Structure formats: C-alpha cells, structure tokens
Image (cartoon, rainbow, N blue to C red; front, side, top):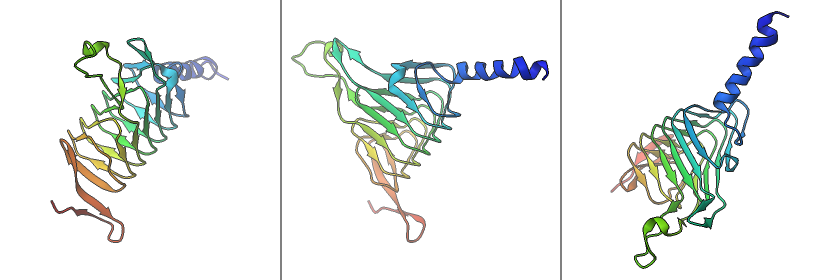
Length: 198
C-alpha cells in the first residue's frame, strides 16, 4: 500500500466530510451542505441521501425567541437539489420531499412575527406558527420563490420564478405570480400540461 492510499485518501475523505457535513445535522449518505452556510439548531435538521445544498444556505430552526420556546424540525428528503442562498426558517415544521429541485434564493417559512398593536414592539412579541410547510415529491421551485406558512404543495408542482405561494395546491399544479395562482394542470390522460381558463 503506497502513501496516497494509506494517508492521503483518508485525509481527503475526512476533509470532504468536514466541508460538506455540518456537525450535529442528521445527514444521509452522499449528502452535502456546502460552505459557506449558516445553520441554527443543527440537530433539528435532517438531510436525506444524495441531497445537495449549494453555498450560502441559511437554515434556521428557532428553539427560543423572546423567552418563548419552540420545537422546530426541518426535513429535506433524498435526492433533493437546493440552489445557492436558500433561506429556510421554522418554529414548527418544514418538509421538502424526495426529488425536489429548488433554484437560487428560495425562501420557505412556517412562521410570522406577532403583530398585535397592543402587545408591545413587534420584535418583543412571540413568533406565531401559521402551520407547517410541506413540499411534495419532485416539485420544482424557480428562482427567488417564497413559500409562506401553512402551504402544502402536492407532488410534481411547478412554481414560476419570483412567485409568492400563500395557499396550498394539489399535485400536478403549475403556479406563478404574487400571490401565486394556478395557470396549468398536468393531465395524466394526455400526458400534457393543460392551461387553466382564467
């Protein structure tokens, strides 16, 4: 066995793990979260096998805010691709299912600030869960999409660039806009995306 086999190869593997596998995160095999990255409460994050999260990700599972305690979880499935500068923030639950593709600057949240006029400054009010977020299998979210609290997208949904998704849509929906609306549905009988009359 030569020097490269005995010393260098294991060091390269270790270096790759340090670079791409953040400490405390539940990582599947061949998954990577590339540097630079910022992860709050890494033990609340689960990343599936063969998933790639490109540089600049900010993933925040908030356990405590203004002396209020939360139990967040963020689960990213197998074979997911997440582009640069993704931002996920949760006090409840965000789930991105297997095979999804998220473009750059995608924002997903399950919370809102307290905005009651009689309960003091906004930054001193408790965060409010508006419901978990569920992104179904094999969805595509375009550049700079925002997915708001309580949204559920069925399998194989397509979300156009710069859309703000404020409500749930069933499987096989193509949506776009601010707020996002249904523009096409996938018809399994014909194998085509069919425009929806407005």
